[in-house]
Each structure stands twice: as structure tokens, then as C-alpha cells.
Image: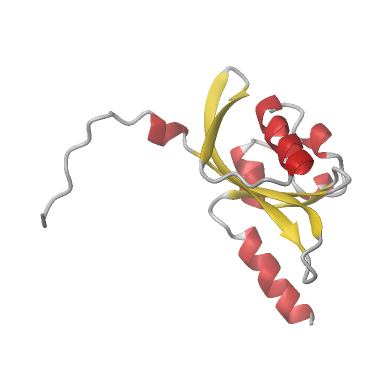
Length: 133
């Protein structure tokens, strides 16, 4: 069903966060455009099929997260790492998940992430919300 596959791919392509999926052999199975923007990668399509360690070589902490997820198959919920882009630190909030087929066989892992750099720079004491109790 080409229409259904295209629909699901459009959902992934339009996520407001980054998504990178890596197969068990370490190859990038999918990377969405937002992942490219967050990580300042020039274009994501040519990265499919490449080893994640090569694609993410500029981000050792992110490579470590992927390596650990592939090694242990454990999921991580709402963690943060700091990666460098040039001389600027980026605070990345992420979660990992297992990618399984219908028979519950593990096919790989995925990492979803957001750039939290701006959020982490907000003052610690924000004013309380208005209205209500």
C-alpha cells in the first residue's frame, strides 16, 4: 500500500523532534529532516545505510547513547546530554526505543530528541502560571 507507507513516512518526516533509527548492524535505517536540522547536518537522504558512528561522528555523546541502546536493548525515557556544535554546546533531550516487528523480534533502535538549549537557559524561577489555583 504505497499510500499508507507514504502517509506514515510523512508523519516521521514532519515530527517536530529529531528521529534516528539504527538497525542491529549499526546502519542508519531512517533519519528525519528535523534530526538533520538539530544536528546541523547538510542533507539527511545520503546518510541512509551509512554506519551511525560515521553519521554521528561529530557528536560522541550521541554515538554513546546509540551504542548503548544497541548493546543493551534497554529504553531510556527523558534523559539529557550535551553535544558540541563547533564551539557551542547543544543540550539534547532524548528517549530511546526498540524497533520491533510484528513477531516482537528486535530490528534495531531509534532515538527521538529535541534541542533543549534554549529551554535550559531560561531562568530557574519563572513566574507562576496565571489564573486558577
